[in-house]
Amino acid sequence: MSDVSPPQYDAQVVLYTRQGCHCCENAEAVVRKFVSDITRVDIDSDPELLQKFNTLVPVVEINGKVRFRGKVSPMLLERTLAAEARQAAGPAS
Image (cartoon, rainbow, N blue to C red; front, top):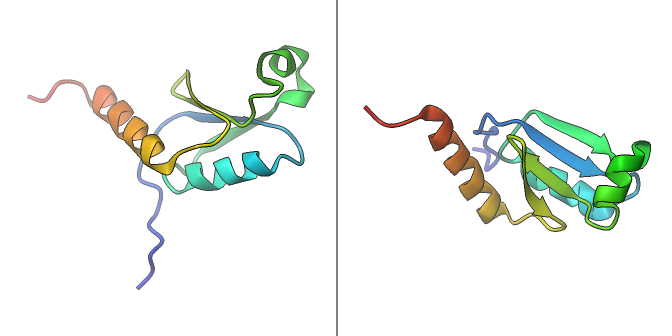
């Protein structure tokens, strides 16, 4: 039996990163435990993003909102994704 479970949340996740960023690689590994579809954006390819996020990467945006800068806490990430899923589901009937 494997300890690895498939990603369980459906959210639009954007990971702002740059080449050679070890923290960015770690952040992606954490996010992939919960979400399978991640859009990676290299900030060095866009002067506006470079100015906005230069020393803050990795930056994790979930459903259009920046939720993490720097280190990504697995516990806080899971709580954030669960809250986003509840919000998307709407009020319980």
